[in-house]
Image (cartoon, rainbow, N blue to C red; front, top):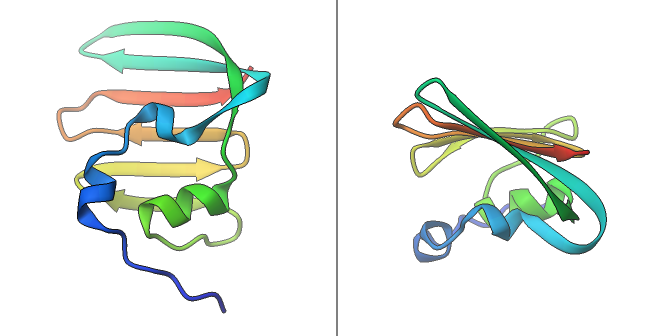
Length: 97
């Protein structure tokens, strides 16, 4: 069983959506839902692997998925898809297009 390191609070605090995206090949669809509004856009790039995301967040991967609350943000991830729900109710989804 791999050793999971606790995240450095300063590192987690500095993470943003772009931290989970790798530049390069592929297309990603980003969907942001806030107070009844929905914004969709497509960008070039790919999501980092679930293992890389878990290491950045300091959480465990179970059955190839992440389902955790980190610094007040609900994070759910699986291969090719990342969902975040913030304390104010806003939601963001990043997935392969």
